[in-house]
Image 1 (cartoon, rainbow, N blue to C red):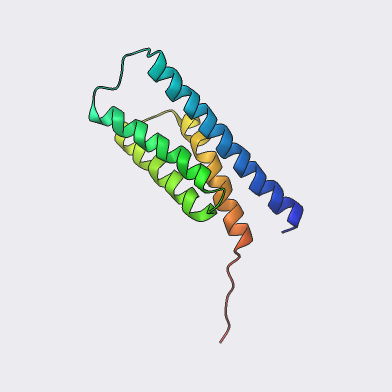
Image 2: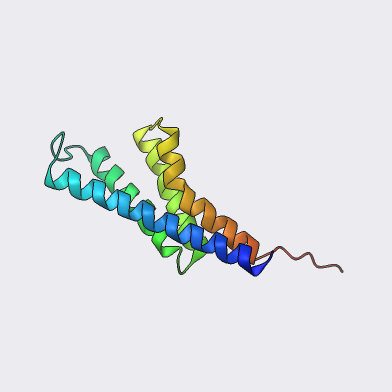
Length: 117
């Protein structure tokens, strides 16, 4: 792949991660400063907040460590989906986008080499 395409992919992933973290941060701040439904009361709610926080943090970690950060982000998002039983596909897709882009960037920069014997 050309350097321009690789750099565009990397910076798109980084900007998507930053946008995700900012949007999530604003939602958390807004919910804790002016709650619409009261503070979280159940363990599942607190676990959901922790998992979504980890999803955002993983996306930001992928700026430095693409593969590890992307896997942390996607794994925590999958656990969140299982735990909360979310059905909002668009929300999950938006949250997964930075990690998917970072995975694509990592795969593009680390091609599989086949060794012949």
